[in-house]
Amino acid sequence: RTKGGVAVKFIPSETNTGFAGGNNICMREAMEEGFDFVYLLNPDTEVEPDFLERAVAAAETDPKIGAVQSLLVLGQERELVNSVGNAFHFLGFSYCVGYRDRVDSPGVTALKETVPDIASASGAGVLFRSEALRKIGLFDETLFAYHEDVELSLRFQITGWRVVLAPKSIVYHKYEFSRSIKKYYWMERNRWIVLFEYLRWPTLLLLSPMHLLMEAGMIFFAIRSGWWPEKLRVIRWFLSPRNLWGVWKTRRRIQGMRTISDRQLMHRASTMISYQEVDNTLLRRFGNPLMRWYWRGARALLRW
Image 1: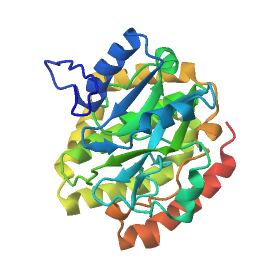
Image 2: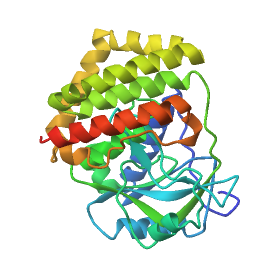
Image 3: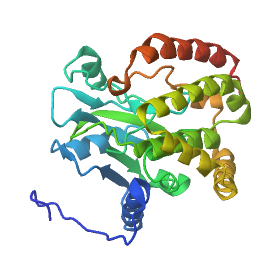
Image 4: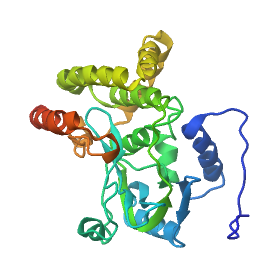
């Protein structure tokens, strides 16, 4: 039991299967035991006593809600937000929305009277409906770490389930933005996997000019920041026929599950990267305006 008296069951794993695989082991166990919901909670968190009841209450407002993210507050600065949901950028990037906004700001306060739909739910504190997981599956273990919560959020949405925020369910997350060079391999590889698996070919073609520009920028950034070896690892991974075949098989399965169009799926896609930890003058003055302009035109053409 925990110090608070909560019963705990430890499930050992002989291998490191990452965030995706580790959580899948626990979710399967909970579903086999017949629980209606499973809640994923990072070990670097603290919670309000009613956080779980609030999350379940939000889920019960609509039987088509498949995922409910709690309002994540910075554990070190509890007057500031960590995430009110994660963004999904039309080029595949993801970042915390509302990061470092004040918890008592008008925008955050207004959320507390609603159960708003969000683009992606953070895996740091999220409730999943077991019924939905049985139908669409668990985390994609190929992703290992990073973007696994984005991918599952998109899978919920592409199959007709809602992904929402429970603003009254409060989780304090001792969040620190990792600058480890190794993480760039997972982030870059996985955003491309998600894009290839979820977007239809006409959409990928429509966005390809912007992807090429961004790729040039990412290569420049990789060289300048010293993580170009990780970028080369990503390229090598996609040059493997075995890996490409795996992505292709997953793409066919996901496209066969979809119940909505790309236009609907991309309805909440972010048009800019608005995250303080990666802010720079080039992105703010050139990159974001260009991406907003491009997406405005692409969105008008996106009819499928």
